[in-house]
Image 1 (cartoon, rainbow over the protein chains, first blue to last red):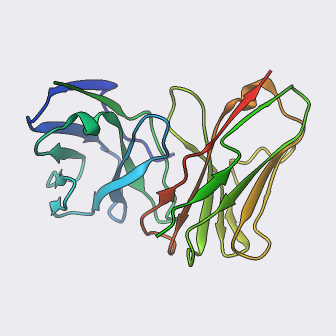
Image 2 (cartoon, rainbow over the protein chains, first blue to last red; image 1 turned 180 degrees about the horizontal axis):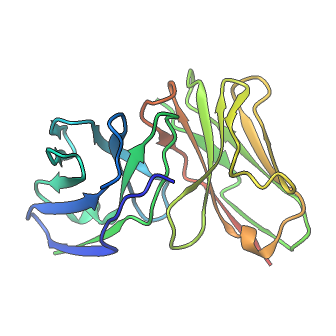
Image 3 (cartoon, rainbow over the protein chains, first blue to last red; image 1 turned 135 degrees about the horizontal axis):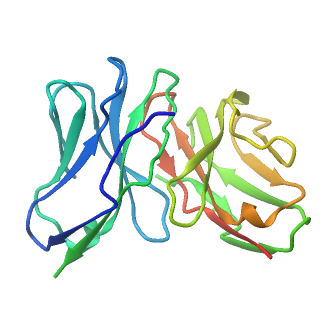
Length: 109
Length: 113
């Protein structure tokens, strides 16, 4: 059971940055950290993933702690369309994605 | 590019009835997954296929759930007989290969009365 710990919910103001934390203190050296998000009434969608180095893409940035026991997903300017449940997932050697409860992000106008 | 297609979108049945869900993955995607998502929880993996072979079905309740992907493309997930606790959204996902990004369908919402 690939455990990660995330806050149940977070709030943000529109057009402000959002930092979504994730703890994965028992992560192994070969586990990747993946982030997916799920908008209402839709399936999850891929956001970003990384192993050791920080990663950037058009959707977000991923900051990984040096000891890899935690990571932070950064949305640089939250919009109302970013309101979703964000899942932080350890991807194990079997390449399975095991979802936890995620963080429900609410964005206020 | 067409996404992962699932049908039906909604299904309501009575307990002890049978139900089947269908999934058409993105063309060329070798890996296919079925997830169960109970309201308020994250998705739970039921089964993973690589082409037409099963990679992992350790969390599939095999006494009542079955899945197949006979030609390595479309897949069906069946529940027989259904129980009240099977009420959930059943999500299908596919990826080009194991370890790569998953693409999810919109799911089938099952209500068992």
